[in-house]
Length: 454
Image 1: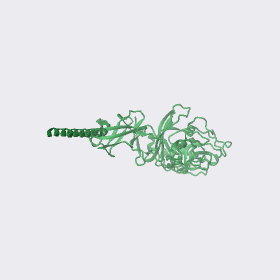
Image 2 (image 1 turned 120 degrees about the vertical axis):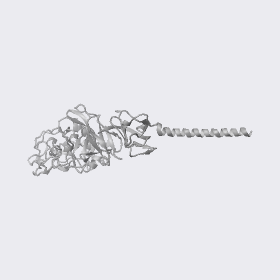
Image 3 (image 1 turned 180 degrees about the vertical axis):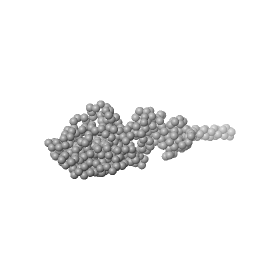
Image 4 (image 1 turned 90 degrees about the vertical axis):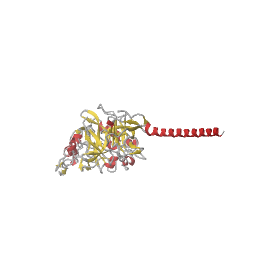
């Protein structure tokens, strides 16, 4: 009896031990699965740029919009790598020395791998490749926004109905260019020769100085200048003196026949091969609009509101110059719509509402009929960047004198006369051969670029 009882107890203990071991193996299996089974092993060294000859297996887990997937996305499906959130490491720890990226051909590049069994969590979001660098598209907060132009009908065939604009207080759009800090406005439509294409548009972070948009002798427009970009002094300054980095130069006179220093030792001579020669839209407008309406009006091919300037149309105006709707050149200025699309709005006025509001209303509390929308200007990196009063390239028809659109230091669209001294921040388009070679676009780690032929 005692022996049988001992056997029964022993069997019970054995069952408990077996069950316990089973639970341990089950839990271990789950942990192992969650640790490695969701990761795909990669031994192809073509995708690895490590610091040792053979870092061993690298495991990848792929997430689309936060959800785990078996494989990485394929090319042209609209996903890019979210480098800010993707990371690699060993034993569950993130290794900040390991950098991971995705090329335009959807090849994974991992730099700094030194240990076998490295695991990488790769997060993918909807986005585009900007200067060869994958940038996620955002719908809130600072970042790159998709802008649609579905309601715009241009006579010129080929205008794409989607663009991509950086917006917010401090998006990651910093670029080192010409050994200076520039900012990326976005990937936008532009006419190159007779074709509509998309190019990266940038603006210099610091002003090159204060200049008149144009000035004239006292017997022309009463010395107030000519608001036609083709004939503007500022156009000549940007596309001649600044473009060619001319030093020890004196340029145009104002109505008092005084000269202005136009020396630009650090102009654009050394980076001309990176800059696209494009058609700038210079149609003269006669009103203030919201950002989408400005965008359309800037690009319309209808006649300008002012074909020529005479005293019967504008007081003291007698230049009799036919205004041009376009100008082909290398360097220009902001459009009013560029300023408008750079906002994300705020708690009281969201982005969509800001884009629907007249740009003059953003800061003009004295205009009760328009209201005032401080969220629109205060959450706009271009407003925070621009130095006091800044010129745009767009001319304005106003009966008292030749004028252009400017951006006031209070963050709304203004109407300075062409002979006013406003800050000038050059704007230009990069060639499609210009690609990023390093950086994340943050204020601490700017994009750097080089010419890379296809």
